[in-house]
Length: 62
Image (cartoon, rainbow, N blue to C red):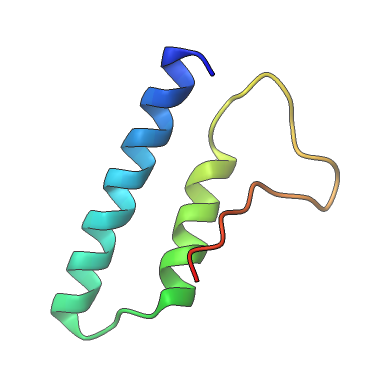
C-alpha cells in the first residue's frame, strides 16, 4: 500500500472517530450509522480501480 492511500485511510479513520464522538455527545450514535459513514468515505478514495457494479468498499465495524 502506498503512502498516499495509507494517509487517506488514516484520515478516514480519524474522521470516523470524531464523528462517533460527536454523535455520542448528541445521543444519536448507532454502530450502523458509523459504519455507513465510514463506508461512504471509503467509496470516495481513488485507488486506481472502481468497485464492481453494485459493490462497495466495506469495513465491518461490528
